[in-house]
Length: 116
Length: 110
Image 1: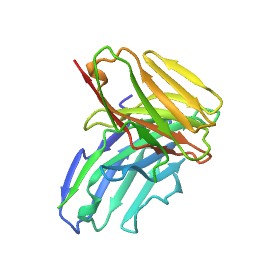
Image 2: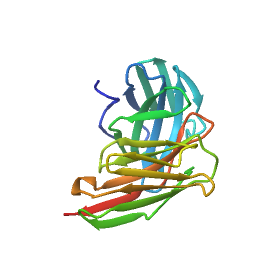
Image 3: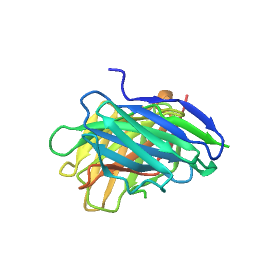
Image 4: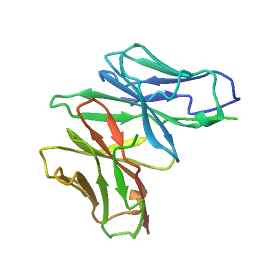
């Protein structure tokens, strides 16, 4: 298994541009999570999906952020328009519910976004 | 928002020594998990302890959980230089999501 695959690994973009981050979860995992990591705020949950349906998007900072999961093997996180304060490492993680409610997460390698 | 607070924020020890990291949280949980993050990499799941468990072992890792004090500790025995990383605790509550602590940066000196 190749694990959770994120692309691109690095993205540098100019303020105002649209940015799309991509994630391929582990096959068979029914939960997908998007996290953002910064020095100031640590790891923040942005949104998560269960069986391709968004369950909680309360962590999405503002309307400039949107996420989709059109099928079980693909998700995108889009920022439009991007701002310098969006600079962070964005992680995707997937997991499965193996009974008893306890989840094991597998993280991707992250996308380091720099907005200049 | 972050659920857990970890201490110390940074820990530096010699190879072969034991490292202990602590995590406190605020709300009731279903389980608590520990993750490791090497610089510039994603997080790697280390161990999970359920709310009805008090102690769990995995190789050189020992995790304790005290739900009355809302705290957990991670002990790494006989540390190695390769253990140098950031360590995060994360809690799962009634919602199916993990909330991460602020992390402890562990440096193991050869």
